[in-house]
Amino acid sequence: FQSVQMNAWLLCVGAVLAAILVVVMMSVSVGAIIHGIAYQTDTFSAAFYAGLKHWIQLFLLFVTAYVLVVVITFTLVVAITTLAPVAQFESAQLLVTIIAGIVFIPLVVVVSFLVRLAAMSIVLEQTHLGQAVQRAWKLFAEHWLVILEMSIVSFIVVGVASVVVLLG
Image (cartoon, rainbow, N blue to C red; front, side):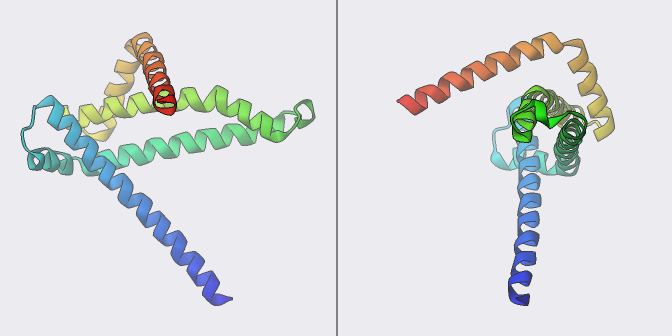
C-alpha cells in the first residue's frame, strides 16, 4: 500500500515539475519569437538568448495569468452553484457549462490579449512586469473594439481551417 502511495506522490511531483518546465520553455520561446520578429533576428541563438534574457518576467506573467483565470472561474462557479437554485436547471453540470461559456471564454480572450501585449512590452521595451501589465491594460482599454474584431476574425479563420483540415 505504501508503494502505491509513494508512486502517486512521485507522479504528482513529476507532473508539477513537467508543467513548470513547459512554462519555462514557453517563456523563453515567446521572448525569442517576439525578439526575432521585431528585430529580424537572423540566427536562432540570438533570438534564443533574447528570450532567455526575459524568461523570468515572462514566466511570472504566464503563471500569474493562468492562476488568475483559474481562480476567477472557480470562484464564480462555486458562488453561482451555491447561490443559484440548481433545481431550475437539469443538473449542476448544465449550470457550470453555461457559466463557463458566459464567463470563461471572454475572460480567457481578454487575459490572452493582455498577456501578449505585456510580453511584447517586456521584450521590446525592456519594461518590468508591473509596468508591462499596466501598459497592456491601457492599450487594451483604448483599443478594445479592434481587439474584439481581431478575436472574431481569428476565431473564424481557425474554425474554417479546422473544418478544412477535418474534411480534407
